[in-house]
Each structure stands twice: as C-alpha cells, then as structure tokens.
Length: 368
Ligand SMILES: [Mg+2]
Image 1 (cartoon, rainbow, N blue to C red):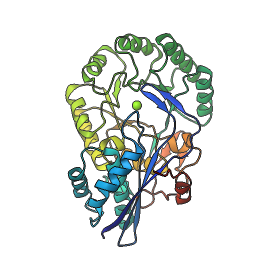
Image 2: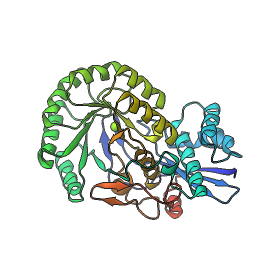
Image 3: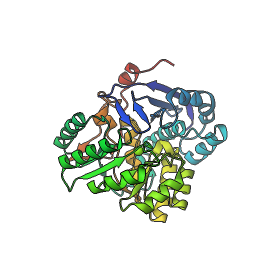
Image 4: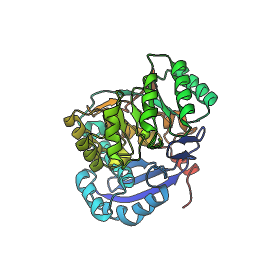
C-alpha cells in the first residue's frame, strides 16, 4: 500500500465564545484538516489546530505541508511511520503541528488496514477514558461563575482557571470565588499561560496555594527554565510545564533541569503520537507524571489524543479534551465522542475510530 495524495484544508469551526488567556486571546479556532489517500482505496484523516499566540499558525502549516512535507509522503507505505517522520524532518525543520496532522492521518490508515484502533498500534490501553477538564477563560467573575455552574451541572469533575490576565488582587478574589463555588474537595487547577509578572509570580502563587489548586501551570515564559525550577522549589503545590515543552527535545531539558513537577503533553507540540509516547516514556522513567493536554482540536484531533493518553502510563492527570464537546458549536466528525460522568471515552473503531464530517469541513473551510 502506498500513499498517493495528501491534502491540507484550513477550517474555522464556530465557537461558543472567545477567551482571554495569559499570553493572549483565543479569538477563533483554526483547525487544519489532513486527508491522505492510498492506492488501496483506504484514506486517513488527521488534524492540527495551532493557536498563533502559542505556537505556529494554520496558513504557514498548510504552506509547509503543500510545499515541503506532502511531496516526501507520496509513495511511502503508511506502515513505515518512523521512516516517514525522519523523511519529514529531513525536508523541514520543526513544524511539529504539521507533522502531527500528517502522522495522525498515516496512523488512521494503518489502523484501518489492520482493522484495529490506533491505540492498539501504540501498546494498547491502560485506561479506556480520561476525565475532562474545562478551562475557564472569561476573566469576568460573574461569567466565570455562571459557566462553571453550567459545567458542574453536566458532571464535570475538574476545572482549570486561566489566570495571568487580571491584576494580583483580582486574581486572588477570582480563584477564591471559584473555589467557594466548587467546594473544597473539587479538583481545581490554575494555568497562567506564561502571563505572570516575573517579580510577582512567587508571591502570587503562594497566595493562590491557600485555595488548594491541584497544580499551578506555566507562570513564566516557556524559555525561563531557571524561574520554573526555582518556583518548583518554593511551592508545596506541583508546578506544571506546558509552554516550556513545545517539542519532545525540550521535554528532555525540563526533566534534566527539574523545571517542573508535572509536564503537559499535547501531541501537536511533540510532533505526533509516536513522539508523544517516547517523551511520555522519558518522564515515566524520570518518575515525573504527565498531563493530557490539547490544543483546540475538533473530534478528529481529540480522538487521536485519546489514543495516546489512554495508552500511556505516564499520564496521571486529565485532560484538556473538551473543545469538540464544549467549545465548538459544530464538530467536524459525524458522531460525537462519548462522554460519561465527566469522562471522555477512547474510540473503539478501526484507525482513529471517528468519521470526519466532510460537509462540515467544507462549510467552515477558509480560502487561503
Ligand atoms: Mg496550558
């Protein structure tokens, strides 16, 4: 079986509302959908959904795929995934998002050809579901409280408060009010998205520890591993790295320098499922737990993330896998991913186990 065509489609599916995060705003979701066809008549789908203020952008990703990466995939066997990754590296530096979308579609084909779900290609399941965490991004107290109530009514057992936008006093009041709403035992997390002021961050985080967050995520700029390591030493609460680990090799640096207690793995940052498995293995060996993070992906990308997270022992904390079900108002797959009692379930069908909604993909296509 050989790959015969590769297509990248930029889409902008509608969202319930915009959000404010430490490093910048979420204005819309840009999802790059990949379609790969083979001479055996089996096709695969993939997705990468960048956020330009975090890493990469959809238009550059499509150009990278069209001009550099798609040509090296033509003629390859979809079973030669490692060789495909090396060929893509030899054709274009970095660009982990584009490589993730392509590798995802290749694995979808391999799974369909073998009649097995992608997680069977990744070592099999260690769990069949993971709890959903929703990120609170309104930065207006009443709207944050109302949305949190809406989520609690739906069975959410985990929420993440996006901080790093308001002033110090308002941050404390907001976290205090949200803790009061959800109760003492609830799994509440905090994510600065690099938005903390360096000279205030340690003091502010110490104050926020009074409200017992499960972890505090990425107060400092991604590159500032010294500040991250110092904060780990200063706090009792675990510190999680997200933007400090934008590639699997940066993951090695964070582990080596003790720059986090927990690491967020998003397949798009790592350059795909296989490299996510490898870096999760590195943290497993280092005794460092990992978090199942995500970008703002539709059901296609979330399905792939579930195959990774549910086959990876290092994943101890779930999960940002809420976009398709709770942020998009129209998903890009035909049947929604299953959610039960605040958990999202790994798909069971062959390949990624989801059927793309090509009509919806066409409806939200952005002409580049
Ligand atoms: Mg984060």
